[in-house]
Figure 1 (cartoon, helix red, strand yellow):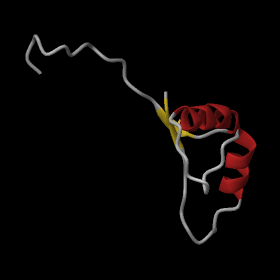
Figure 2 (figure 1 turned 90 degrees about the vertical axis):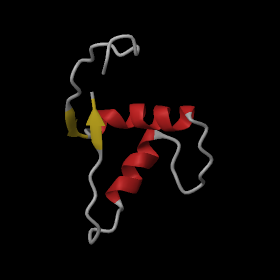
Figure 3 (figure 1 turned 180 degrees about the vertical axis):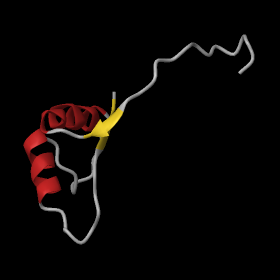
Figure 4 (figure 1 turned 60 degrees about the vertical axis):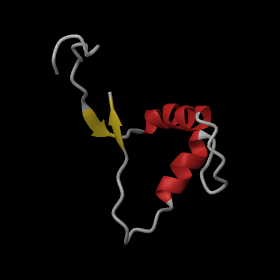
Length: 66
């Protein structure tokens, strides 16, 4: 972008698969957005359980950008 547009140099993001210790942060981000979807869990253990119980016929993977 041309100078003067407020763009700053950014550090590259690293993508990786979600790890067990990431669930508290995922739940905190979700909860901070005040999303009121009853089907979505609100605590980290409920997120883990929901992911464990996904239909194995459906391909699924969570990723984290850090």
